Length: 69
Image 1 (cartoon, rainbow, N blue to C red):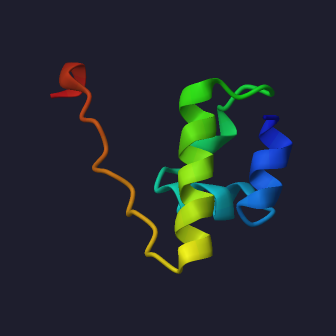
Image 2: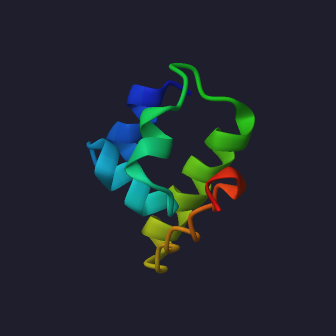
Image 3: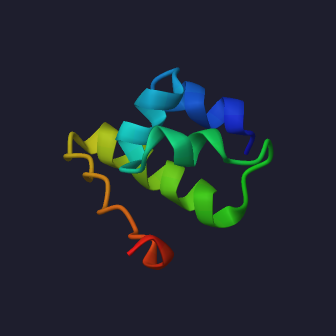
């Protein structure tokens, strides 16, 4: 699956795709042009949730940079 295809199916924008999957805008922005299977699985799961009228997951907590502490 192509990144552009996934974004289109998940709402047409990077922000909509991120919200549908429960990740940040930056995470989607960093996806490669051809998505690996682990991301395709997440896209398909989000599309299933959308079709079933299920809630979308909230983004997880940000990973703390241990060097900054």
